[in-house]
Length: 287
Ligand SMILES: [Zn+2]
Image (cartoon, rainbow, N blue to C red; front, top):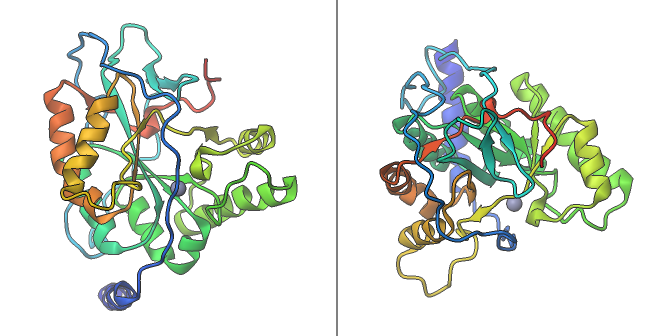
């Protein structure tokens, strides 16, 4: 039974992957707060979240791996959207990994998560409702493979000037969808293009969502057209803005999938580890 279901799912995914690519262009603007060189923090504490290594099997987990739902709260977000340890003596040399605008394609999602697993890293996948509607099984895949789902609005529109009713729908509907598909409700929200308003923040709070943009934009969505080495350009952009607590914005894009392993290796070489989103205390008010 299960195998048949898996085969059907796989086939529908393969078919879907043949469809033409959506022309969605993410015009998110660069970080307002990219700070310069990394601070000379000395910290050698290990990654806060040793995770069980998951099978890289391409089929929807034959033996379901346990999906962690809770972790001890060790980090909070500041007003710059950086992650800082709650314990002042905690490890400051961390980054938060985030991937926006999916779920689009199984191949890219598996590619990203295989690499995350290799580095024992967890990330937030900020998803859009219209994409969940097209591919609920891809949302489930992200969840079942132990990664964290965030709310990125239904239509990926700028919410800054929208009516309260529309904002309610754009955020509320995705909360419902994710709950329906995965059984859990998101606790992270990122407005498309980083464009919010007082009401958007209020609505996020009402939904128990931690509102964030980012503090290190990889610019993977806006690389020069003539860029000959997009994977390297993504790494260069992140490294230029790297600082303790960096909240790194990336997307479900082919060159980001390609470069992620190298990027994470280079971050580790600089002594950085990866914040488990589940270890972020979303109830703390950013200061
Ligand atoms: Zn986006």
